[in-house]
Image (tube, helix red, strand yellow):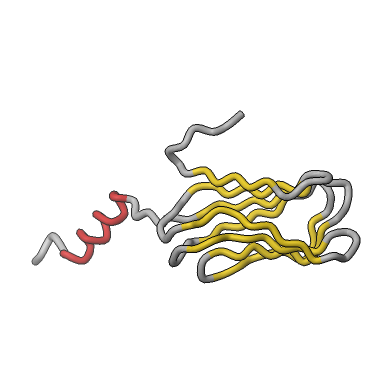
Length: 121
């Protein structure tokens, strides 16, 4: 009788090692007094978005970066004009947080932070 099954040992080792998959935790924040609609974030090889974002509302999404390239956000403002703002370049394997904040009378503010970076106050 065998007391040790190699497949069980491999599974246990992987569990103990804690397999890690790099991802970006994105937050889109509307800090304006007007609703935003048809919001889309483009990133290398894919995109995500939401139909609408009310004032002072946040939208959260997690994604994995495959490939490398620029990011951009597209949206329709309260006057029904399509808008676009470029963001940072992401690379395959990047991980961290991406925060896009809409503020009154300005372009969206982008903040990409990796786990090793100190946060800004």
